[in-house]
Image 1 (cartoon, rainbow, N blue to C red):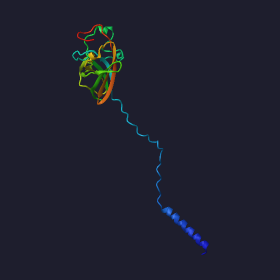
Image 2: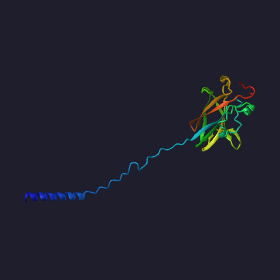
Image 3: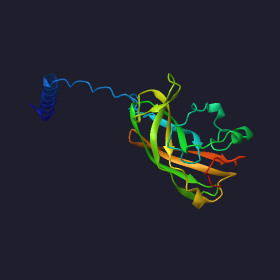
Image 4: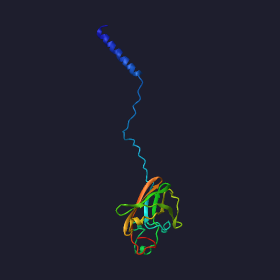
Length: 216
């Protein structure tokens, strides 16, 4: 066999060996299809709604008349801006008698919660603190009884409650003349362990006559 025939025989044998190896090799599974990276949206963060809110609806800046709860019903929202609960128009001044220093709150809660008043502080029209007023005698307005009743400082879920606290009277001797001035009452209330704040301005108008034993 000449050299040319030998080379041809080697090439034929190599081709047969390669074809045989390709037939014996197992077939590979197809690669999984990869979609676009944005095909699956990222998980959204849970939204935590506000579980409670408070509103300081009325304030009486007066004296200490035995620590009784307010006798009047909670004020309607439409009347809140005009309410001063310690002064008022000529009719209110003419009817003035000894009034108990107090505050009334509207509490809206999504969950059953325990309420605690952490602080109540009075400020003058220049923002100067006039001292803290200790809260006591918590009561809640009963629609059925049409009056404020003793209250254990808990509110049910999905409710709005009108509540009241008797406050220690301001130190009028240190403040001086209380009349015809604007004050701001600020309170911090814990609702289910979360602190909420509320405040209200109060215009204290001078009455035409004072109840007995009340200093000007």
